[in-house]
Length: 200
Figure 1 (cartoon, rainbow, N blue to C red):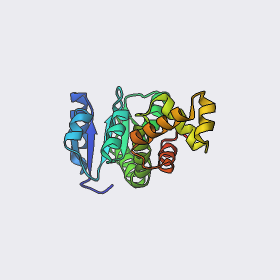
Figure 2 (tube, rainbow, N blue to C red; figure 1 turned 120 degrees about the vertical axis):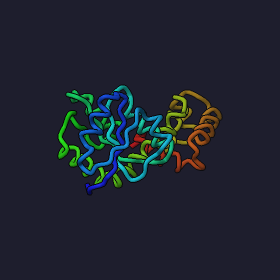
Figure 3 (cartoon, rainbow, N blue to C red; figure 1 turned 90 degrees about the vertical axis):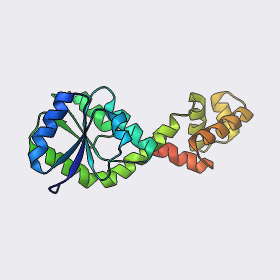
């Protein structure tokens, strides 16, 4: 990471936010502090890395917000003495790295450099996955089941047999599914399902 880089800091704890900003002040890393994701969304940054306190659902909330806005910045999560399941949850939600806070400047720089290096490639994949998941979440349980049948290459009749509903009902669910997903045809819906990891 070069001198003069900017990071976004999202932390609802005012004292910790101030301490982190202060600790990085003389390092050449410019810190833009935000109290929460909502505040960040009002002034979306460009070409940066987000250092985000892993509290409540902040990581998931930020990833979902990026999916809805079609924008991506690499996320590095942090927390004091995080448990392994907590780190795993954050990474599965979309964080590229996780820091056990407090850490030194060298560790912050290394995490940010890693996020910047892998952020562009991974970010595109993560963003597409998150956007696909947000589309899938709009579907009812039955519409998801129809989508899975479609992805398995089944006809409306076969999907109906699998779900114990009529082919006409399958057709209605299929049309609703395409509309909610913003898909113009079945193959596009299948692609979205694959990106969302709904189907293999």
